[in-house]
Length: 113
Length: 113
Image 1 (spheres, helix red, strand yellow):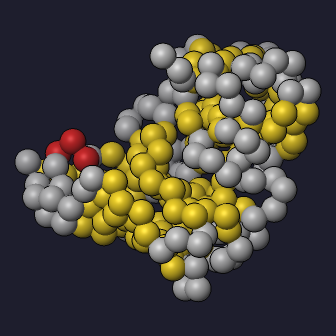
Image 2 (cartoon, rainbow over the protein chains, first blue to last red; image 1 turned 90 degrees about the vertical axis):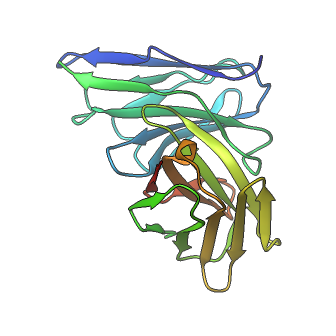
């Protein structure tokens, strides 16, 4: 059945290391999003993509990078430039360009070793 | 800049009680207002979406209202059950080409048996 798959569920990063979080959707949605959630806080938008081969920075894009080479995939790389990467990362998708409800994956929890 | 606030941050009620969760937003220029549920360590589940032209939406024991002029939305839960225990987040969809969702920090609800 359709949905959004995020992997891995837990990820550990060493100092100076880049790590990539996977997000795959089989809902045939055009738009995809990456959010960061810190304890007791709401979600903050990192990057979003409304169409293949195009993406835009959100409110906290520094230290992160994305690609959108396929409609169903939107991987997020947390680079070594992101000095405080410990957080819960959520991927979402929606029909059209964003007016429809967003569907979320189950998240990836990233921690520093 | 749009800001979304949710009060209270946490709420504990006995089973069977009717309850109201509050959400306020600073800019009334929104496409819609969405309510989500988040269980611990999980992603978000969409509960209700109210278009800017609507006043309320209902789904089962849930009813959400929207008053754009006052910048407020409420989520009403009737006859609460322990299974309703979760964090509830509201989010406003920006009325610009970004179609960004701006989230509140959530209300953590505990329904005691």
